Length: 401
Ligand SMILES: *Cc1c(COP(=O)(O)O)cnc(C)c1O
Image 1 (cartoon, rainbow, N blue to C red):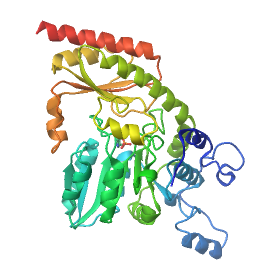
Image 2 (image 1 turned 180 degrees about the vertical axis):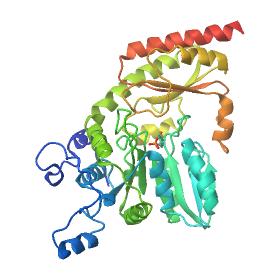
Image 3 (image 1 turned 90 degrees about the vertical axis):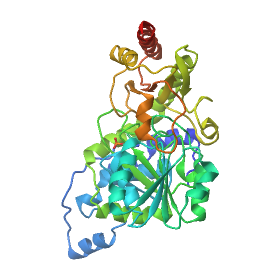
Image 4 (image 1 turned 60 degrees about the vertical axis):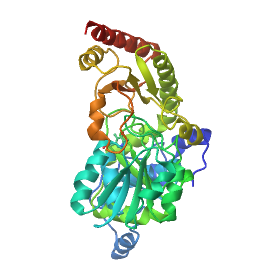
C-alpha cells in the first residue's frame, strides 16, 4: 500500500526503479533490446524458466532490464505488487478486463468512461457473451442494486472522460468487495500520483502512460499496476495474450517519469488560472475542473486527490456549431488533436448531441457546447489571451444569427 505524501512522491518520481542491477552504475537504465536470451548451461536455462514470475531474463516477450526498471518504478510510485505493460492505454484496459472475465460474466462500467473503453464492452465483450451494465458516475451506494451474482468487475474512471465527473471510488470499492468483485480504475488523469489507488481499495490501477508519464506526445504506452490479490492473474493472462512493448518506448516513459512532478505542478498552476478566468466569463455556463466546486463530484476530489493537472472542460451557455468552428479554427496556441498530457496545449469541442451516443444512463444536464482543453507548459497569459480572442470570435458568430 502506498501512503506516500505528495513530497515523498516527487522524490520517488526521481529515484524509482534506479536499481544498480538495471542501470549498471549509470543514472538511467540501458535500452536493452532482445528477442533471444542466451543461456550458459541447461541448469541456467531451466532456472530462468521456473523464475517466470520474477524479473529474470528469459525471452524478449517477458521483458528486459529496461522493462524491469520501469515496472519497479511504477510499483514504487503507485504501490501494488506488480506492473504489466501494454502497447497503449486502450490495450491495458481491454487486457485487464479480459484477464478477469469469462463467458456468462457481467461487469459494471461507468457511463462516462473513455469512449474506446465503451466500444470495447459493446463490441468485444458482447461478442464473448460478457454483459455490461453502465452506471451513473454519481451512483455511490446505489451501485449495490446493480450487482448481479455473476458480476466480476467494477470498472471506475475518475474523473470521467470529457465531462469530468469525479467518482466516489472508496465507496464503490467497499461495496464491490463485499461480493468479491475486482475493482479497476482508469487512473490516467491522476497520473498514478494525485490519486493513490491502493489507499482507496482499488485492485488494478490502469493508465494511459501515453499521457503524463510519457509527457511529450511521442510514445503510446499502457500500464496496469495490480495488488497482491490480482497480480498473478493479471500478469499471467496478459502474457498469454502476447502483450509486450518496445524497450525504446519504455525508456522514454521512464525519462518522462523523472520530470513528471515538476511538469504536473506547472500544469496545475496554469490550469487553475485558466479555469478561474473562464468561470467568470459571460459566455461560460460552468467550468468542469475537478478542483473547482462547479465540477460534479468536486467533494470527492477534495477528499481523495493530492492535486490536479492541465486537463479540464468548460460548458458554454449556448450551442452553435458555426460559432464553435470560428472559435476553434482561429486558435494560435491551442492545437486541435486527440490525446493530452504532453507539454503542449490542446482544444476540442463536443456538441451536446454527441453525448446521446456516448452516455446511455446519465445524460449530462447542460445544453451548451462543451469545450475540453489541455493546458500545456506555454506562458499562461498567452493561453488566456488566445481563449479570450476565441470566445470573442464565438460571440460575434452567435450575435450575427
Ligand atoms: C487516452 C486515454 C486512454 C487510452 O490511451 P491510449 O494510449 O491512447 O490507448 C485511456 N483512458 C483515458 C482516460 C485516456 O484519456
